Length: 255
Ligand code: 13P
Image 1: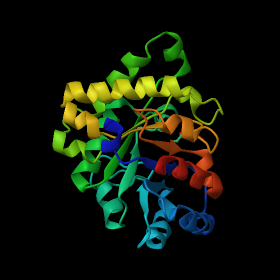
Image 2: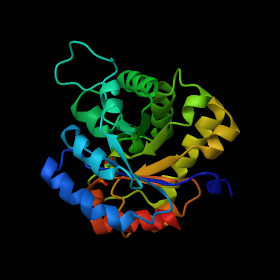
Image 3: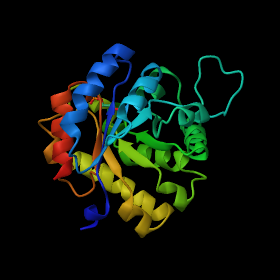
């Protein structure tokens, strides 16, 4: 099975939660619970928490990510953070194109592509988020939506660079709603994304490419989702703030 070629990646996306002091508490609770994980464990945290979390995760199996990145290396962009700033802090991953960025902060497919480029140039690993809204699903344009988002975001990315990228399929209607895509719905879109990678690059690239699912993934439903052939991990929101639940998902991915 091709799934064996891929190491699952479970990434927490803390979103706009946790002060540095609260982050310290959360990360120290998570550390021992995931220490024997047989999958990649990542926590993507607010910028203000990065310094502490990076320091605190040194020498552990937890990798650290940011939740966004600007496309320029430096300049007059008040309030923004660049990729070289993140790598200088020891950050390894970055979430790009999350639907909350697209919905509330005017993120477009083009700016997502620019951010992916900047992240790769700096040596960061993008966790690229794609997903359809409820309206798009109801209009039966889920696959078209995913194809457009994926193709634009990956334009200019070489097959070699693809090794540093993960795609997270996050149906917008399943985020923070408690409404999870069924195992089959999630796997169907993940399979479609893998097909896109095969078309754009090669079958070899697609076979080893990690495609996560995200959207109300929790301790109860993770095992079912992660057992699917094309679901190679998860991008976890709410449940990543609960150490026992996050650890349970990591355990499900380690089987
Ligand atoms: P929830 O797990 O809270 O639904 O959030 C998913 C998500 O948006 C992760 O990026």
